[in-house]
Image (tube, rainbow, N blue to C red; front, side):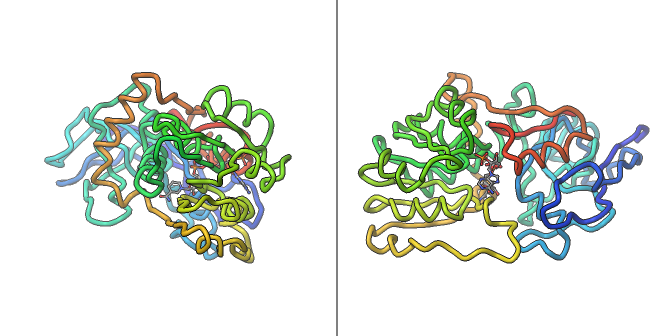
Length: 343
Ligand SMILES: NC(=O)c1ccc[n+]([C@@H]2O[C@H](COP(=O)([O-])OP(=O)(O)OC[C@H]3O[C@@H](n4cnc5c(N)ncnc54)[C@H](OP(=O)(O)O)[C@@H]3O)[C@@H](O)[C@H]2O)c1
């Protein structure tokens, strides 16, 4: 198709401790791809971010995620409209959330047979701005929704503790927990984030892990123990949450941003014996396993959003070239909510 497709292609791997910046990428102008039979082209409207994307840049040092090759377009999720199609199930004008990569146009096969390509999702009821479908109506929200409801199995009145509660997934877990009638204790780094959690997100209590003693605050805010601990960070926070679990408590393992990229790997939790004493359960989940239930979850999230029970938390960066900065901001802890880039 006539026209330019700007792309960010990996120039070199990231070094240990280095910040993610535009320097790591070549900005390449190629032609907008032409769909072959069974393919379609998506014009990227917005990009979403996940800490896992740092691992894609790490080359051979990446432990849990497949790295991308030098010269490859940076892998990432986006949302956009189908602008050309030779695929029977995807029509021009429809909106999809999928692995667009960091580029303005992407070729999609529509194949949903493998795990990674399962990330293709038709947006049945598009809301404006479309970046909502990477935010409170997209994969961060699905992680919060399925992790909290299916693995956490909340009951009204229970005490829920969330780490990185001011983050993308965490701030949605907090809102869903309030919708379900739970008492919510949010953990975040810094006074501003803690204030945001109380005033905007509606947490009942907050812990600034950079200033407070986690153990003391858990005892103060969760005197009967933690019924559900939704973990995004691992490390010490997980450890003290394990120590303070309630009988039959549940630990939902969503992520471990505080330790995941550490070389050499850090030792594991010390207080996991409490899983025995408290007859508690600790279980990980992978959001894409719930792919077939995304449309139903999306519908419920839209209803909560339209009724004002679920508030939008997107932090918007502008333009393709701001994608590295948006990703880096997840590790700098510099913003509340979900990062998106509008193209
Ligand atoms: N299981 C799944 O299927 C699934 C799906 C999506 C995401 N995840 C995982 O879920 C977690 C949350 O994802 P997200 O996209 O919402 O990210 P996020 O929580 O928004 O991540 C950014 C935040 O993490 C916190 N953080 C960064 N470095 C940290 C450190 N060393 N120690 C403690 N906190 C740190 C910072 O908040 P503070 O300033 O408050 O420290 C930062 O603002 C991630 O670990 C991600 O990998 C899992």
